[in-house]
Image 1 (cartoon, rainbow, N blue to C red):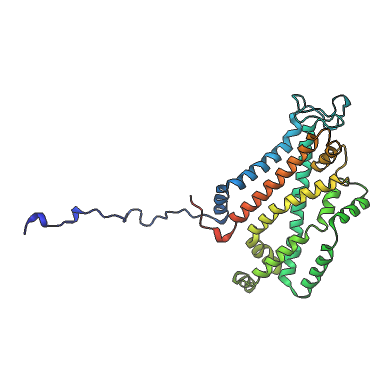
Image 2: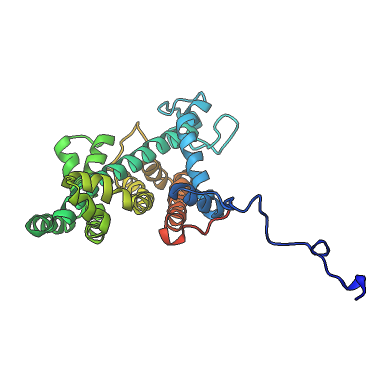
Length: 313
């Protein structure tokens, strides 16, 4: 036999087998929230919405201090002026600086929107969780109460609260908007609890002697936290719009205080002559609601458990 025909191991290179790195994990372990954040960052539309909301919040804090003009100071000599170096957004019909009033209005509108939504969600989680977990007669009583409250127009409730309190400030608006605002959240939480309360981890907690309240707070609610966060994001635009509507029809924030709805009301009175005075608050209301809806849609996709594991690092 010719020695050139002899095949040796040195003539081949073993591929696909790295003994040193054989036991290494190629993909790092990610928690639920880390995985959701990675997928949210890939959604450019949702991140744009988040950026706009963060910008508006920052400007609501520092914007009024970027000008020396007092948002309450009137000056008929400079009424209804176009934007200029002295007044970046112009002035209103009373000569007040619109830059300061727009960002103070943002502070009020965003505060009411976030506060009302969080309070509504908190109340809805408690009532919906108790109703769905215990069921039976308690569930029936709670749901009948919810059905009655659901049939009461929120506008009538707001008017009654303001009449009873004798004022129409931020506190009155928040109270008026949470009296019936928690109903949707309660129904949502009740439905989720009904789906989860017969799962194995809940039965295991019962066997181990966990109390009903502990099961609701430590096991049921955390397992629907992703959906709750999405629900909160989707509910904030509705609260902001409700405040704007109440202020627009004259039962919300009253001068000299301001909000985006109050600014829209004042701008509507001079719309034909000075259209930019209603365009400014309308623009901020619209972009805020759009941004929150885009962010909520992105969060819904990012927090979906069925999508987990698809993100790449």
